[in-house]
Length: 123
Image 1: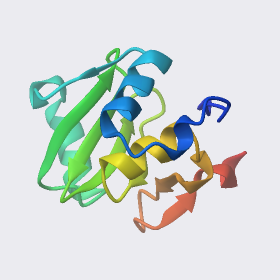
Image 2 (image 1 turned 120 degrees about the vertical axis):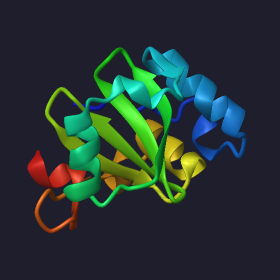
Image 3 (image 1 turned 180 degrees about the vertical axis):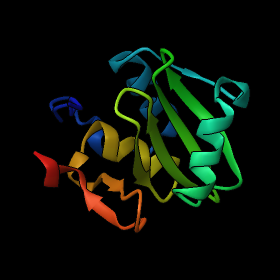
């Protein structure tokens, strides 16, 4: 389960992308990652055929299990742990804010319909 940060220090309202990235890296062991070779051919096929993610770049990785992808500006989270895709936001700042503070705004991407399903629908 994702752990949302509390807004005790006022960081939720930050407009500073660098501060949001620092919070992400402090929260979990994320690193900046750009090498797509970490993905198998099967995963790349899944991104394209199942989720319609065709022209992505890799943004962040946590261990070898969770990856942040950017496709046409939209940020997705791919989890190898449960083979799920989550839409994080319309851009990196929105995705960071949603992931860190507003997880109710995160949505799973349905594997069949590509419909966005609120992440809390499965709780």
